[in-house]
Each structure stands twice: as C-alpha cells, then as structure tokens.
Image 1 (cartoon, rainbow, N blue to C red):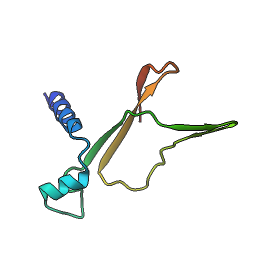
Image 2 (image 1 turned 60 degrees about the vertical axis):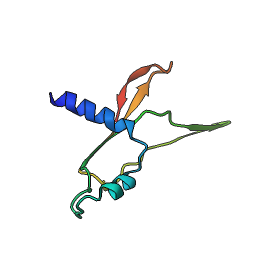
Image 3 (image 1 turned 90 degrees about the vertical axis):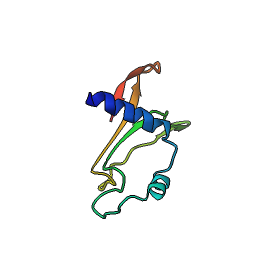
Image 4 (image 1 turned 45 degrees about the vertical axis):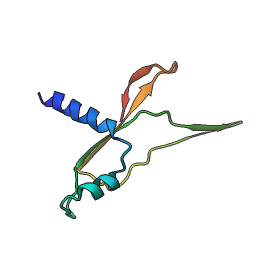
Length: 94
C-alpha cells in the first residue's frame, strides 16, 4: 500500500533528521543537474517546536514566517502543530 510505504519512509527519515543535507549530498555524490536538487524534488517539513516569544511591558514580539519567491524544491510543504489555549493539540497549520 502506497501510504504505508510513505509512512515507513518518512519515519525512517525522521530518525536521521539531524544529518545536514549538504553532508548527504557529499557522501552520496549524486549526478548533478541545474534543473533540480540532487537527491529529491519534494520536501515535507514538520515544525513541531514551540515558537519563542519575547515580551516587554506593553510590547509583545512574535516570529513570523515570510513567504519566499523561490524554492529549492519542486514542491515544499511546511506544516506545524496548532494547540488550543490549554496547550492541547488542536490540529495542523500550514
């Protein structure tokens, strides 16, 4: 089943998520082309860490994700966990 294979591949990739992309490219030494990335053309990023905020009296600063005009990949999807006011998981954003 395709979804089972995607799930297994994704979970295996998460196990090694701390390895820098450039390190993989250097070790695997794939064929290079200016038309696409050397290892894959689709990226899924799960942002599941709490975003820091900074507060001063009368001022609150939050981080923002700025859209970009270009992408390193043909398809790049970034999703994040959404939590309610009590900190309980309440879905995904992205």
